Length: 158
View 1 (cartoon, rainbow, N blue to C red):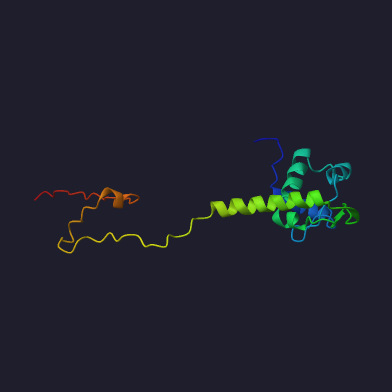
View 2 (view 1 turned 180 degrees about the horizontal axis):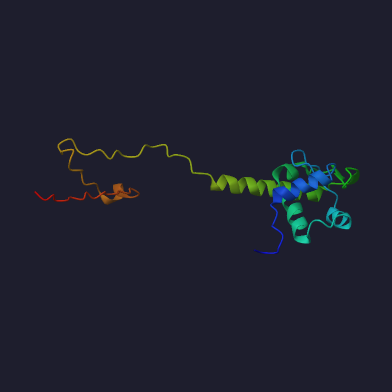
């Protein structure tokens, strides 16, 4: 077994921060954090490693709800929930750009809309027997996967 501490998930780290400093960290209703809050946390808390703290702050500050709160003139908060500066126009514009980019990426990854014209029917011609399927042109077969199950025949001894 490894002697290393188990790596905590970002949600567990954010839960830890919100329990320790409820005035600053709230996942459901986030407030803009003070610039340099990482140094403030590092000065009073030794439980989190530098990597864990960086990861927790990165995840928290990149959530959609946090980015949506970054509007010009909104007050930032320190660890105790006291006001400590304001969000600038440039910071608000950057947050809006992140949100727009995320929305564009989500829209691009969604399934394309269904075509307006229906797909041609693959029904066999009427004069063919149902046991023998109709031969279809190659362009109509594109994208069709056919699986065949072989039947095993065994002979029994009399």
